Length: 214
Image (tube, rainbow, N blue to C red; front, side, top):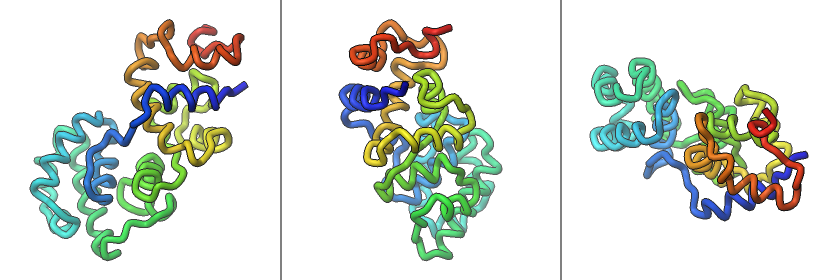
């Protein structure tokens, strides 16, 4: 039993204007922010990219940047050496492509450090096509609500693609991030006040999330 329509509707009511939590003004900036977000909070990434893009305003300047200079700026994001190398590599590849960002997950994943999560993010927010960003919030909530029994991101993505309509996918993933921060937190989730569970049990009175079953 997967009352996905109740979940989609409830989250849309709670977070009608949900958007990507990473700040960017150009598509290439989202690629870089996505790379920086690995094992780092969105809040910290936004602080770092504000500094990074103030110094390097386009792909050409970043492609020609000194790795040590980029490392110094992005150090607070962690894994700064490999991330700096990838950021420069991303921009070098974009320069070769005359600034054109590919519009498929497979092509995006050919860029240094770009995995499926960031590739999906770009597909949804830049190209406005169906995307399924399986970050830690999405995986945790999908498991708790019975949308997926898997924990590997690509498998959770496969499960969600089967049940979430394409037109709802991008917005839903953004809403899951907010819901995961406000209610369905990793520790001490607010189950008794969960508006999603309340929306589900109106139509599925026997429903219980996996936390409640334990």
